[in-house]
Image (cartoon, rainbow, N blue to C red; front, side, top):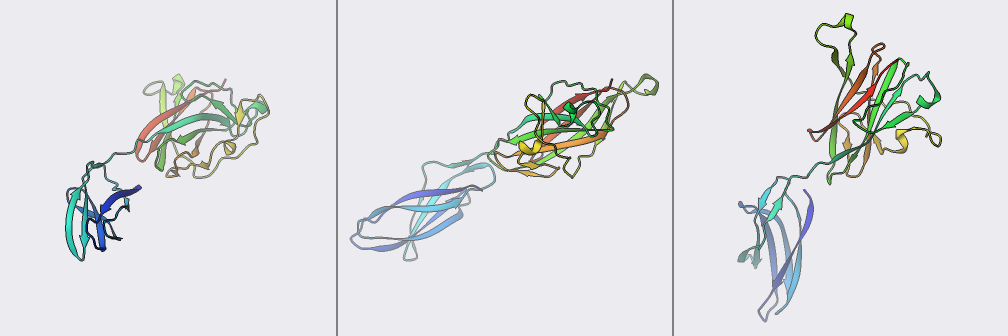
Length: 251
Protein backbone atom coordinates (compact mmCIF):
# COMPACT_ATOMS: atom_id res chain seq x y z
CA UNK A 1 0.00 0.00 0.00
CA UNK A 2 0.89 3.65 -0.32
CA UNK A 3 2.86 5.25 2.53
CA UNK A 4 1.25 8.19 4.33
CA UNK A 5 1.94 10.15 7.52
CA UNK A 6 -0.78 10.91 10.06
CA UNK A 7 -0.25 14.12 12.05
CA UNK A 8 -1.81 14.06 15.53
CA UNK A 9 -1.75 17.04 17.90
CA UNK A 10 -1.10 15.94 21.49
CA UNK A 11 -1.38 18.12 24.63
CA UNK A 12 -0.31 17.64 28.24
CA UNK A 13 -2.58 19.86 30.38
CA UNK A 14 -0.85 18.95 33.65
CA UNK A 15 2.04 20.65 35.47
CA UNK A 16 4.19 17.52 35.19
CA UNK A 17 6.08 15.86 32.34
CA UNK A 18 4.85 12.48 31.13
CA UNK A 19 5.88 9.75 28.69
CA UNK A 20 3.13 8.75 26.29
CA UNK A 21 2.51 6.38 23.43
CA UNK A 22 0.04 6.70 20.58
CA UNK A 23 -1.47 3.89 18.55
CA UNK A 24 -3.22 4.37 15.22
CA UNK A 25 -5.99 1.93 14.25
CA UNK A 26 -7.79 1.61 10.93
CA UNK A 27 -11.01 -0.19 10.03
CA UNK A 28 -14.03 -1.32 12.02
CA UNK A 29 -11.93 -4.12 13.55
CA UNK A 30 -9.44 -1.54 14.92
CA UNK A 31 -6.43 -3.07 13.17
CA UNK A 32 -3.24 -1.65 14.72
CA UNK A 33 -1.25 0.16 12.01
CA UNK A 34 1.49 1.99 13.96
CA UNK A 35 2.56 2.68 17.56
CA UNK A 36 4.99 5.38 18.66
CA UNK A 37 6.29 6.74 21.98
CA UNK A 38 6.81 10.41 22.79
CA UNK A 39 7.25 12.75 25.77
CA UNK A 40 5.34 15.91 26.63
CA UNK A 41 6.61 18.45 29.09
CA UNK A 42 4.27 20.23 31.45
CA UNK A 43 1.49 22.08 29.57
CA UNK A 44 3.18 21.27 26.25
CA UNK A 45 1.40 20.64 22.94
CA UNK A 46 3.01 19.29 19.80
CA UNK A 47 2.31 17.40 16.61
CA UNK A 48 3.16 13.70 16.55
CA UNK A 49 3.93 12.08 13.18
CA UNK A 50 2.72 8.51 12.68
CA UNK A 51 3.90 6.94 9.40
CA UNK A 52 1.43 4.37 8.15
CA UNK A 53 1.10 2.08 5.14
CA UNK A 54 -2.36 2.31 3.59
CA UNK A 55 -4.40 -0.90 3.06
CA UNK A 56 -4.43 -2.41 -0.42
CA UNK A 57 -8.08 -3.45 -0.32
CA UNK A 58 -10.56 -0.79 -1.52
CA UNK A 59 -13.05 0.35 1.10
CA UNK A 60 -13.83 2.91 3.82
CA UNK A 61 -11.65 2.76 6.94
CA UNK A 62 -12.52 4.61 10.17
CA UNK A 63 -9.39 5.93 11.94
CA UNK A 64 -8.90 5.85 15.71
CA UNK A 65 -6.02 7.06 17.90
CA UNK A 66 -5.35 5.38 21.23
CA UNK A 67 -3.30 7.32 23.80
CA UNK A 68 -1.48 5.60 26.67
CA UNK A 69 0.75 6.66 29.57
CA UNK A 70 2.41 4.45 32.13
CA UNK A 71 0.81 1.40 30.56
CA UNK A 72 -2.71 2.73 31.09
CA UNK A 73 -5.16 3.91 28.46
CA UNK A 74 -5.99 7.60 28.55
CA UNK A 75 -8.53 7.49 25.75
CA UNK A 76 -9.52 6.30 22.28
CA UNK A 77 -10.29 9.11 19.83
CA UNK A 78 -11.91 8.84 16.38
CA UNK A 79 -10.65 10.95 13.49
CA UNK A 80 -13.17 13.34 11.92
CA UNK A 81 -12.72 11.83 8.45
CA UNK A 82 -12.49 8.20 7.38
CA UNK A 83 -9.84 6.96 4.97
CA UNK A 84 -11.29 5.87 1.64
CA UNK A 85 -9.21 3.49 -0.50
CA UNK A 86 -10.29 3.35 -4.15
CA UNK A 87 -9.21 1.02 -6.92
CA UNK A 88 -6.54 2.79 -9.05
CA UNK A 89 -7.69 3.61 -12.57
CA UNK A 90 -5.55 1.81 -15.13
CA UNK A 91 -4.74 3.99 -18.11
CA UNK A 92 -2.74 2.60 -21.04
CA UNK A 93 -2.22 4.67 -24.16
CA UNK A 94 -1.08 3.34 -27.53
CA UNK A 95 1.06 6.10 -29.00
CA UNK A 96 2.15 4.42 -32.21
CA UNK A 97 1.71 1.24 -34.18
CA UNK A 98 4.06 -0.25 -36.75
CA UNK A 99 4.24 -2.57 -39.73
CA UNK A 100 7.35 -3.72 -41.53
CA UNK A 101 8.46 -6.65 -43.59
CA UNK A 102 11.20 -8.85 -42.21
CA UNK A 103 13.11 -9.09 -45.50
CA UNK A 104 12.39 -5.86 -47.37
CA UNK A 105 12.68 -6.08 -51.12
CA UNK A 106 10.45 -3.26 -52.33
CA UNK A 107 12.39 -0.16 -51.42
CA UNK A 108 14.57 1.28 -48.69
CA UNK A 109 11.50 3.09 -47.35
CA UNK A 110 10.29 -0.20 -45.85
CA UNK A 111 13.52 -1.05 -44.03
CA UNK A 112 12.31 0.37 -40.71
CA UNK A 113 9.16 0.48 -38.63
CA UNK A 114 6.52 2.39 -40.56
CA UNK A 115 4.52 4.67 -38.27
CA UNK A 116 0.73 4.77 -38.44
CA UNK A 117 -2.22 5.78 -36.29
CA UNK A 118 -3.60 2.86 -34.22
CA UNK A 119 -6.84 1.58 -35.68
CA UNK A 120 -6.32 3.29 -39.03
CA UNK A 121 -5.96 1.48 -42.32
CA UNK A 122 -2.54 1.01 -43.85
CA UNK A 123 -2.12 -1.03 -47.03
CA UNK A 124 1.42 -1.83 -48.11
CA UNK A 125 2.76 -3.78 -51.08
CA UNK A 126 4.94 -6.17 -49.07
CA UNK A 127 6.81 -9.11 -50.58
CA UNK A 128 8.96 -10.37 -47.69
CA UNK A 129 8.39 -13.82 -46.22
CA UNK A 130 7.57 -12.50 -42.76
CA UNK A 131 5.59 -9.51 -41.55
CA UNK A 132 6.31 -7.87 -38.21
CA UNK A 133 3.79 -5.64 -36.43
CA UNK A 134 4.26 -3.70 -33.22
CA UNK A 135 2.87 -0.99 -30.97
CA UNK A 136 4.24 1.49 -28.45
CA UNK A 137 2.22 1.58 -25.22
CA UNK A 138 2.58 4.05 -22.35
CA UNK A 139 1.53 3.41 -18.75
CA UNK A 140 -0.40 6.53 -17.74
CA UNK A 141 -1.52 4.91 -14.46
CA UNK A 142 -0.25 5.78 -10.98
CA UNK A 143 0.68 2.15 -10.35
CA UNK A 144 2.84 -0.46 -12.13
CA UNK A 145 0.90 -2.70 -14.50
CA UNK A 146 1.59 -6.17 -15.83
CA UNK A 147 1.00 -6.24 -19.56
CA UNK A 148 -0.36 -9.19 -21.50
CA UNK A 149 -1.36 -9.50 -25.13
CA UNK A 150 -3.33 -11.56 -27.61
CA UNK A 151 -2.62 -11.39 -31.31
CA UNK A 152 -4.23 -12.96 -34.32
CA UNK A 153 -4.16 -12.57 -38.09
CA UNK A 154 -7.50 -12.00 -39.83
CA UNK A 155 -7.02 -12.77 -43.52
CA UNK A 156 -9.04 -13.18 -46.65
CA UNK A 157 -9.51 -16.67 -48.11
CA UNK A 158 -9.52 -17.14 -51.88
CA UNK A 159 -12.87 -18.37 -53.18
CA UNK A 160 -11.54 -21.77 -54.17
CA UNK A 161 -10.32 -22.41 -50.61
CA UNK A 162 -13.41 -21.25 -48.71
CA UNK A 163 -15.35 -23.56 -46.42
CA UNK A 164 -17.12 -21.19 -44.02
CA UNK A 165 -16.89 -17.51 -44.87
CA UNK A 166 -14.43 -15.28 -46.70
CA UNK A 167 -12.08 -14.62 -43.76
CA UNK A 168 -10.38 -16.64 -41.07
CA UNK A 169 -8.63 -15.81 -37.78
CA UNK A 170 -5.25 -17.37 -37.02
CA UNK A 171 -3.81 -16.93 -33.49
CA UNK A 172 -0.26 -15.56 -33.36
CA UNK A 173 2.35 -16.41 -30.75
CA UNK A 174 4.05 -13.29 -29.40
CA UNK A 175 7.84 -13.74 -29.57
CA UNK A 176 9.84 -13.71 -26.35
CA UNK A 177 12.81 -12.14 -28.14
CA UNK A 178 13.43 -8.67 -29.48
CA UNK A 179 13.00 -7.94 -33.20
CA UNK A 180 15.94 -6.73 -35.21
CA UNK A 181 16.66 -3.06 -34.56
CA UNK A 182 17.12 -0.43 -37.23
CA UNK A 183 18.71 2.98 -37.22
CA UNK A 184 16.57 6.13 -37.09
CA UNK A 185 14.96 7.12 -40.34
CA UNK A 186 16.45 9.84 -42.52
CA UNK A 187 14.71 13.19 -42.34
CA UNK A 188 11.29 13.02 -43.94
CA UNK A 189 11.04 9.24 -44.04
CA UNK A 190 7.95 7.74 -42.34
CA UNK A 191 9.65 5.09 -40.21
CA UNK A 192 11.71 4.89 -37.05
CA UNK A 193 13.29 2.44 -34.63
CA UNK A 194 11.47 1.53 -31.42
CA UNK A 195 14.69 1.59 -29.40
CA UNK A 196 14.69 5.41 -29.60
CA UNK A 197 11.12 5.71 -28.34
CA UNK A 198 10.44 2.91 -25.82
CA UNK A 199 11.91 2.29 -22.37
CA UNK A 200 11.69 -1.49 -22.69
CA UNK A 201 10.69 -4.41 -24.86
CA UNK A 202 7.45 -6.02 -23.62
CA UNK A 203 6.92 -9.74 -24.10
CA UNK A 204 3.76 -10.98 -22.29
CA UNK A 205 4.04 -10.63 -18.51
CA UNK A 206 6.23 -7.51 -18.57
CA UNK A 207 5.75 -4.99 -15.75
CA UNK A 208 5.52 -1.41 -17.00
CA UNK A 209 6.06 1.26 -14.34
CA UNK A 210 4.15 4.56 -14.24
CA UNK A 211 5.24 6.78 -17.12
CA UNK A 212 7.22 4.06 -18.91
CA UNK A 213 6.82 3.28 -22.59
CA UNK A 214 6.94 -0.32 -23.77
CA UNK A 215 7.16 -1.95 -27.17
CA UNK A 216 5.19 -5.09 -28.07
CA UNK A 217 5.32 -6.85 -31.41
CA UNK A 218 4.37 -10.01 -33.24
CA UNK A 219 5.27 -11.56 -36.57
CA UNK A 220 3.71 -13.96 -39.03
CA UNK A 221 4.42 -15.77 -42.26
CA UNK A 222 2.56 -14.15 -45.13
CA UNK A 223 -0.52 -16.00 -46.34
CA UNK A 224 0.00 -15.57 -50.06
CA UNK A 225 -1.41 -12.72 -52.12
CA UNK A 226 -4.43 -11.79 -50.03
CA UNK A 227 -5.66 -9.00 -47.77
CA UNK A 228 -4.90 -9.33 -44.08
CA UNK A 229 -4.94 -7.46 -40.83
CA UNK A 230 -3.37 -8.13 -37.46
CA UNK A 231 -5.32 -7.63 -34.25
CA UNK A 232 -3.20 -6.93 -31.17
CA UNK A 233 -5.32 -6.98 -27.99
CA UNK A 234 -3.74 -5.37 -24.93
CA UNK A 235 -4.38 -6.26 -21.27
CA UNK A 236 -3.08 -4.53 -18.13
CA UNK A 237 -3.42 -6.23 -14.73
CA UNK A 238 -5.80 -8.68 -16.42
CA UNK A 239 -8.09 -5.87 -17.62
CA UNK A 240 -8.72 -5.59 -21.35
CA UNK A 241 -7.50 -2.18 -22.50
CA UNK A 242 -8.18 -2.26 -26.24
CA UNK A 243 -7.17 -3.61 -29.61
CA UNK A 244 -4.76 -2.22 -32.20
CA UNK A 245 -5.68 -3.25 -35.75
CA UNK A 246 -2.99 -3.18 -38.43
CA UNK A 247 -4.01 -3.63 -42.05
CA UNK A 248 -1.71 -4.83 -44.80
CA UNK A 249 -1.87 -6.63 -48.13
CA UNK A 250 -0.02 -7.74 -51.21
CA UNK A 251 -0.58 -6.69 -54.77
